[in-house]
Length: 438
Ligand code: 9WN
Image 1: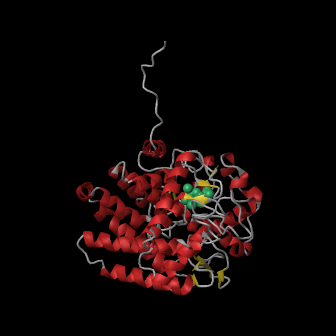
Image 2 (image 1 turned 30 degrees about the horizontal axis):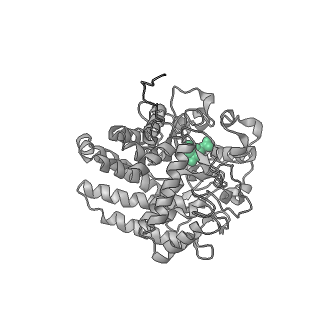
Image 3 (image 1 turned 180 degrees about the vertical axis):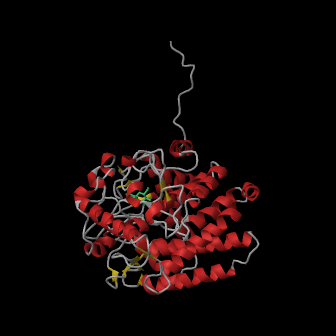
């Protein structure tokens, strides 16, 4: 009879596999979202990644943010992509020769030594910096981490609040769908319909080399993304005049959360944080005043060029739940909407869909038009917990962990079946799963 001497090989734990993804995506100074689809450093990805990475290596998490901030422009903007010069130009579109940051961005103070895009992404960075600091205050202190990042983060918020208040109501506007981070959300359909697409033959989509076309934005979407970005570049990245200008609830809520974090950072450095907390409260009031829609029980986007609230329900309009300072009735309504028929959390869905399940444009596979994403679900898990919804937060946490596990850390999933879509081995999916494990 055969005797098995070797113990049965057990599968590595979720923690170990998440760490392996982050190791595989680490370039030495930052982490790529995906080796295949997104082989450079992305702004809000890096912030989410740092939040998870702090549990593995506080040093790497600090470095991740420092690398991004080193590419900051003189006017304070943090570019949405920092390009890795050793990656071939045709690996991702639009590549550095499209953005031409060091020439077209000169007036706005683009760095000379590193190539970047010229648009921004949601400001999760101060929140990430604070959480990274808290993971190892001794190391942070020894390296002067907070003292180093604080002036840059302050300049970033200043840029957004001063140069991007295009509506004059105290909120920040995005000038491109890529800035908000939910590229092809149905919220952009109406404002984008006014934009003349760049001809399809004038660019080559590298994303289709790696992603299924039915999981990605359409060619028509891309034509409009290219047109908007080209026009912005050709205006030397001067803010204000673009055809697309939208006040978005998630972007502004993340700025508010980060402003509170910046207040804590200031206090830790011995300065008073009270003015920043007060500013965050004023921004919260502006958010409610300008974007709250009582009839739909959630926040909506405001199209500044059309002048109206956009009547589409996106997960973006639920993200302000992350703010503990939200008026109670608003928070209660958001929880009802999240768990009601439009998002179905705990009923028909386990993770939060990116768009209205009952919306005409809903598509369970197409990117930000329905699939559930891990970063927004992580934000809503925090939001539910912050508002005392412990059971719901626990259930969402379980769902995020089991779907990250079952899909090999997918970029996004079908909200009904949990089927993996987009890339696997995705940076923020691994990082945020790690964060929820701690
Ligand atoms: C454009 C990197 C980024 C995310 C965005 C996501 C996607 C880029 C793309 O990938 O956008 O920035 O090429 O589709 O929509 O949220 O930051 O992961």
